[in-house]
Image 1 (cartoon, rainbow, N blue to C red):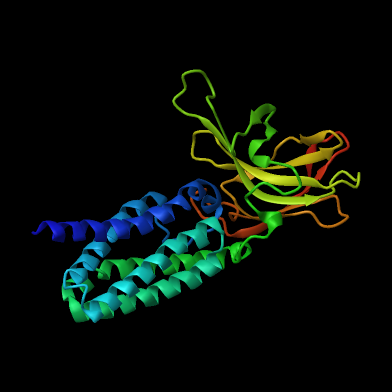
Image 2: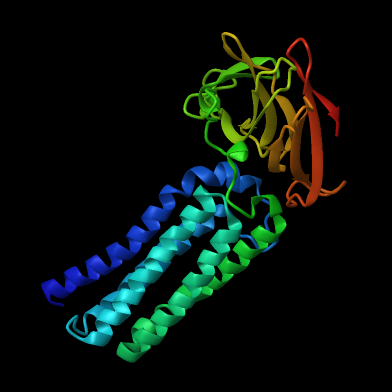
Length: 323
């Protein structure tokens, strides 16, 4: 193998892997938080599978692109094939942004449909230049077809996540001066301070496990205390080191001197939050989520819609109205 040919192979694989790297930037932080709350289809594989599968697919894609490139970039058909290949790489990377960063399964499904069509186009063009290059893309289109099924199922099973979130349901700090990612909250009587959205503490000295508390988001603003000043409600999660992932609602009460957070009210274990809402003039916090049917094991994906209504007492305590 000539040296310049070797570099072509390295570049082709590296460019393909770059698409995966870009996508991973928007993916990793969302898997244990937002993605973990979604209702998923029965065939949804464990999250750890996706990394090795995509890494392998990007290598195969890079080799396929190399085989076409090696036929001579001066050829018009080669230029066209590689151009379309580049388009599908852009669609590939953008899917992670739309699905994970924007939290929009619907538009992600539109994106992956366009990606699937682009892959078919690439395969047709590659077939005319190098049949081995086309065959190397077979695992890719099969996996994207499966990913499309998962994407569609998640969209259908999570109607509240079908479109890009509104500011009141954003996972970023609110624009009214409150920063939930750097707030101090109280869970089961213990004070926890989040720094950049996370807190990790040892339950006992030298423990091998950590209690991890994360800012989840779903912020909602409204007057919950009747003083005419908008307060901010948000959700947090806590992983105590076992199999559970507990979701809590917290309210940051706006005062003349700043914000004061209430106690964290437990919503449930491994539920699927949908939306958080404060109706105008209601002084009630409404948390919509999905839970399991009575008797279903915790391994079952939440599929039953539920509503939790909360209020802030005059003493600044968050408590339930009904469930």
